[in-house]
Image (cartoon, rainbow, N blue to C red; front, side, top):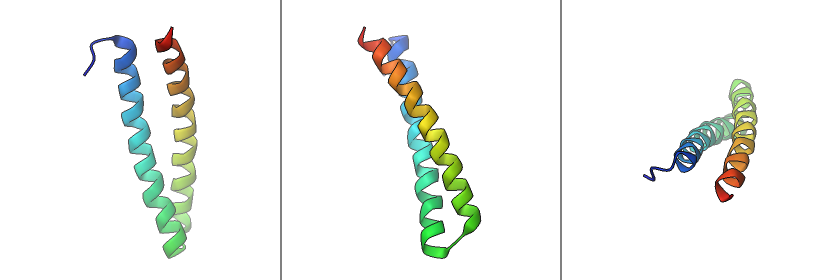
Length: 66
C-alpha cells in the first residue's frame, strides 16, 4: 500500500468499484438467466453507482498525475 494520500483514495475508489461491479454482475446475471425483475432494479442501481465512482476515479487519477 502506498502512503501517498492521493493513491490511498484511489485505492479505496478501486475497491468500491470492484464491489459495485460484483453486485452488478450478480444481479444482472439473475435478471438475464432467471428473469428476476428485482435483480434488474438492483443491477441498474449498481450501474449508476459504478458510473459515479468511475467519474470520481477519473478526477482522482488526473489529480494524481499532476
